[in-house]
Image (tube, rainbow, N blue to C red; front, side, top):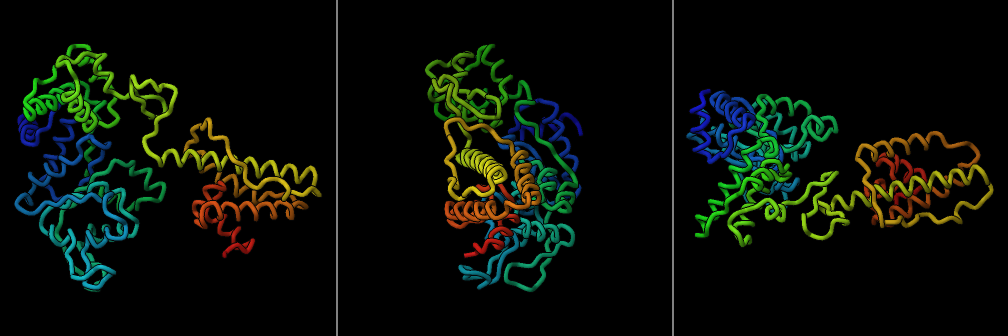
Length: 407
C-alpha cells in the first residue's frame, strides 16, 4: 500500500495525524477491504474506531450495497435479538407486526457491530451461527433464513480478559478476530494532538465567525504530552470549550492547564485550579457504590472472624448478644482492587469448610441472622446480599436453603 493511498484516505475521511501507528491501522484497513473477512477493530473510547468500518466498506466489493452501524451497548438485552435478527408478529408483547432485523436489511452489504463485547451470551451464540453458516432464525419463528453480510466489529474491551472471565464466548472471539485493527490512543500519537487541536479550533472559528485560537510553543508541548484519557473526543471538547470561553486568542500553557483535568494515581481525575485538591472525584456513581460494597464486605468478614474467635474462647457466651451488622466508617474509603474482592470470596468458602467442631451452634445462629439482615437490607436481592456478605452467590443460596430462609 503506497503512501499516496494512505494520504488520500486521510483526506477523504478527514483523518488528522501522521503517527506510525495510525498509518499502520489505515494500511491494514485498505489491504483487507477487498477480502471478505470478518474484522475486529479495537481501541479506547474516543480514539476514532468508527471510521475504520466505513473505510473497509467503501473499499470493498460491497461498496454499492447497504452499510449499517449498530451500537450493541445501546440496545436493551431484551430487544437485541429482535433488532439483529427480526421478529414475527406476536412473538412478544408489543410485537404488533412482523419486523426485519439488521441481518435481513443489510443482506449483501456490511454490518458494523459497535461495542460487540456488550452482547449478551445468548445473542453471542446466535451471532456465531450466522458467521459460520450464514443462517439465523427470527424471534418467534421456526423458519431458517439465510444472509450474506460482512461483519465488522469494534470494542474498547480487553476481549481476552472477557473470554477468561466467561463474559464472551471464546469461539466467537476467534471467529470475529480473523483480522484485527488496533487504533492507537491519542497519548501514543505525539504531535497529532497538536494538529487535531488546531483543526477543531479552526472549525469553531469558521462555524461561529470568531478569531481562531493559536498555540504558543509551551502550550503545544502541554497538548503533545498530556495523556488524554478521553482521546480525540476529549481533545475536541477542550478545543471547542476554549474557543467559546477563552478571552485571549493566543493560548499559553497556564491558560491551557485551566481546561485540562490533572490525571492522578488510580485513574481519578480532578480539575486543575478547582480548589478541591483534597477531595476525590469519581467517574461514575457505580464506582462509588462498588467502593462502599467492598468496604462493607471487608467489615462483615472481619466481624465474622471476631465472632468465631470469641466463640472459640468462650463457647458458652451468647453470641447473639453482639450486634449483627456494624456500620462502617465511611470517612476514609480505600481502594480495593477487583482481584482482591475475588480472593475474599474464595477465602469465605474455605473458612466455611474449616469451622472448628463444638461451636457450630453459636456460629450458625449468628450466620443465619447475618444472612437474614443482609437480605432485608437488599430487599431480598440475593446477588446484592452475597456482595454485601462477601460470599459467592452459590454459597449464599446453599446457606439460605440450609437455614430455611427461602421465604
